[in-house]
Amino acid sequence: PSPQITPIYQSPKMKFSLLSVLALVGTASAFNTPAFAPRTASRFTTELEAKMNVADLSESDLKGKKVLIRCDLNVPLDGKTITDDTRIRASMPTIEYLVGKGAKVFACSHLGRPKDGPEDKFSLAPCAGRMSELLGKEVKLAPDCIGDAVASMADGAAEGDVVLLENTRFYKEETKNEPEFVKKFAAPFDLFVNDAFGTAHRAHASTEGVTKHLSPSVAGFLLAKELEYLDGAVNNGEKPMAAIVGGSKVSSKITVLETLLDKCDKVVIGGGMVFTFLKAKGLSVGTSLVEDDFLETAKAVMAKAEAGGKELILPSDVVVADAFAPDANTQVVKSDAIPDGWMGLDNGPEATKEISAALSDCKTVIWNGPMGVFEFDAFAKGTFAIVDVLEEITAKGACTIIGGGDSVAAVEKSGKADKMSHISTGGGASLELLEGKVLPGVDALAESKVPA
Image 1 (cartoon, rainbow, N blue to C red):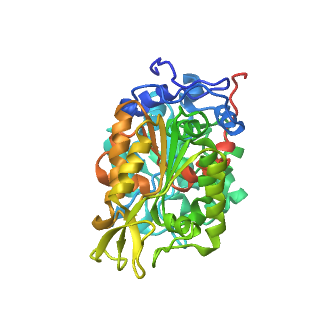
Image 2: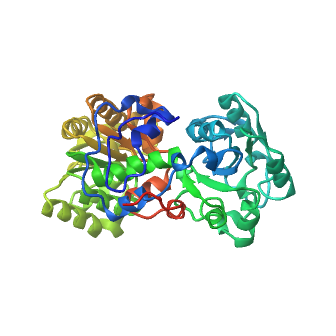
Image 3: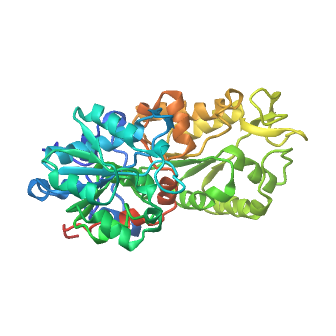
């Protein structure tokens, strides 16, 4: 049975008890005090909370049933060797729960981008092997994701069996959500669980299409946890709330930047996008990356922050280099004194101190995008300093959310991933959820039967 733990965030239509999910997923260590205060939920939050999750199903709903679960097993490989099994481990709690309830579990996922049919290098065989190790029982790999062989394995499965279907993207119909393919894909199964947050922003056959044929279709624990943290923090996070938005381009982050500026008290700008803002202020930026088409956008963001009484933080000093290379010549300069022929590639030490001070009293912090080119040691200090300050405030009870992409890679590289409240498994999905967009893979799930 699920542990009975009082949820720390509860709204009128709450369906996901965050700490109950965390207890099942086993990542509650960084959660010391309530991070989400009850506040008026937005339309989008309410929509998410009205969805069913796997814990809403009774044992009789699951026992002996053939359950199709969409996982995100798109892991990095070196040949046939998995170099990072984070996504596989993140999928285990829901699979273990289904096994414990006597379901016959059929997991599916994509891996890589096969161009034209099956390719051995994109086989999910390594994932089946790692899942077997984690579950302590054999996970058989089906030879396909549709067809007679899959139907035969489904008919012959015993309660508690786990089978991994072969790569869904061996069929181009998967990403096209082609109706006939969807019908074949869903045919052997009784119900559907979506636990793949990383692909929830795609209306593919295995994320959205199958919900038209399998009922109920519900969220898994990982998907529920992602929605709780990312959407819950943005719409209901305890104040003061800050967002750290980094990355190279304003164009790719403008929507999330504007959304977070509406919600947060403080917004830190970092990465290459800094220099579009600095140029918009009339400053010289040398050969730094600038999107001239977004100078007016940057001006509008700064004006919006000022009008709303929000603190928009740009670095006061930067590390500049004479080339984009790990061994380039470097110097630290004030952000209003970048010399010609030099490019900014990281925050400077004064900027880091100012950002650390600004974050020190925050109760909720959402981070999406690095402060510099952290892949090169010479330009990594600004990014890893953010990791350090987030570790400190998490220990004091703040809720810290690493919202996907390169910021996740930076935290993982620092060795401090377990010190954060939540590390998102989604890249594009994290960004779209933070932008306030409805995710097709979530929207397609069954509505909660609990009345408002």
